[in-house]
Length: 94
Figure 1: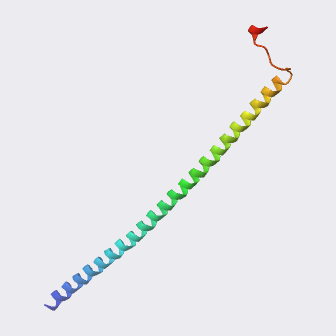
Figure 2: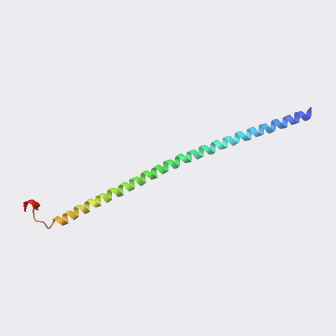
Figure 3: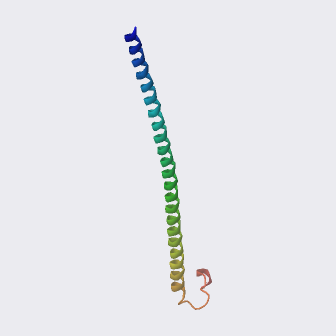
């Protein structure tokens, strides 16, 4: 009878140890999962900020190109027309 009690006690102790180990594993896994989820959200936010900054830079560059193009076009027209005295008659008025 004593051997059966010892065997049962050993089996119970082994089961309790396994259950405690499994619970600890699940707790650690939950903490790691939460840390990874937090890191993923943080990374997504950083990537969104970088993307918006890049869009702002590209828009600013595009506006600068448009501005330079407009100034250049205006300067070209002014250069072409500066030698003209007064109003230029239309071809049908000549």
